[in-house]
Length: 457
Image (cartoon, rainbow, N blue to C red; front, side):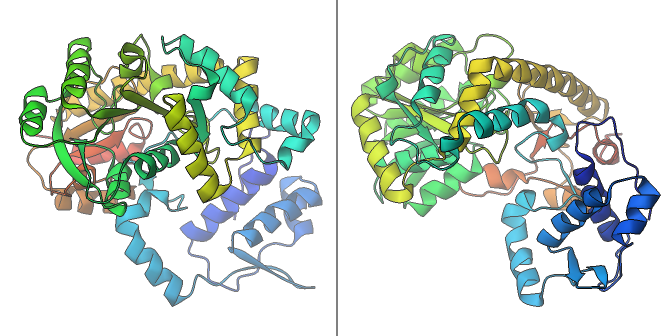
């Protein structure tokens, strides 16, 4: 066993040791009961303090990979029992991208790699709250959310021409929580709503859970297909339209001004609300069209989140709406969860007020832009079909046009790649051969080999 530690890295040595030991155990299929080097031996070999090695071993014990035997040392733990393994196998098809596996390349996941995250800025904000605002480690947040965060949001929203009062802002535990609150407040079982196809799979799951009927509107390169939408509206009276305006998930496309204005006209004529999911807002490279800015929140309810840019673990999102609806949502939020996480909201507020968030999102956009260009070039070189060429964000919707998902999945499995099938992004789960590709992972050698394996002649 050999550890390669980078003492110049921003990642703490303790975490480097733990990560490399975990990878070694899984890669080498080390048998349960195998004794690891003693704390003194590993510290001497790697020129580390013994406390550093102890902390790394303790982290692996907490993860269930090692077990400590008093007076004997640390040993590789036995794998999960059969019952837990069977549970994992049944959950894998739907939730595989959320597994804690370091071995698979999650080519279709919905977030950037951990190595792309700005650990230094985030760590500084966390330390600042811990040292300077210790009460925020323990207190509840207020029903509408942390006032300091809502003030920062109010200022930021003005930059994208969305003007709101603080009583029109409600914080949530991420974007999915916001959508759940809206479903509870606006809809009841049997109601009908409009959704985009393809679209956000977890929105579909949420609506099904609440007993809501979905009407699928095809997504075109410039937004929802207006002809298809108008044909549906001639027959049905939906209560809401759920839409990604910018960097649509999964196609990466953006709404155009003409389509946006027509959507607002149709919402007025047919009396339905629009829920605008804008969680990819901070990936934009140039001004984009937002229904909330055009409508001034009369018929539009706006949802966004910091999970994609900052951290999946910092579940901080928000909803913008008229004060009456915000009060209703706040009540539901308190009934079902006693508010949101004050500490997480303090961290986000600190990053916004210090200017650190603006800088880290700028760096993230530049990196995504480079990888987007490289991925599109790779797909074109291998003859893949791209639904539309995104102008930013992290997603490309692509297919070979000649191979089924089953064929691609089999090849991906050989290469240690986890795919996100196109069927998951269809409201009815229809089979298709499209894939959501996250460009942040597409430069990996395994991904490049996968694209080339399906190269057209």
